[in-house]
Length: 167
Image 1: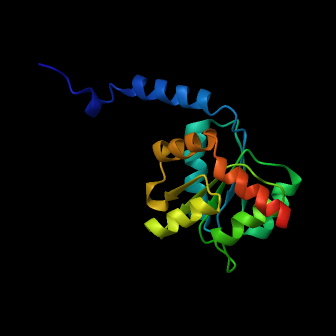
Image 2: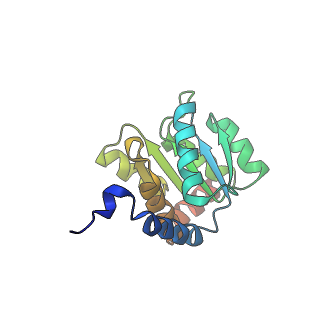
């Protein structure tokens, strides 16, 4: 008789080893900025980031893009998680250029509750590193987004250069 280790927790060490490997891979992420106007969603993302990256991670939070720009100017984050529709009356398509104008050209992972293929393509074209559906927030999907952030992205560099020149 074979034992099903998936149902009884026998694969705990395998999962733990995967988590340790992920933390090593993402060691460059020490300061994260979360721009989210919904406290529950921000807490969920923060908890997911802590599971994935550890408790030594500095996570700063902003409710709106104006506050986020101030935080970026104060200290440059390693990665930004951006709500697709941060209040008041802003969206990620306007927020990404504002972040770039403030001097931030790092990875931006957009979290959206209203994702369509065309919206995703538009956000990626504007410079987002990845777009994650709000319902898919878990350590695996966030790790995928962070992996995208580690890969060189030529379009974002070109977009950032164009925006900073036209300013």
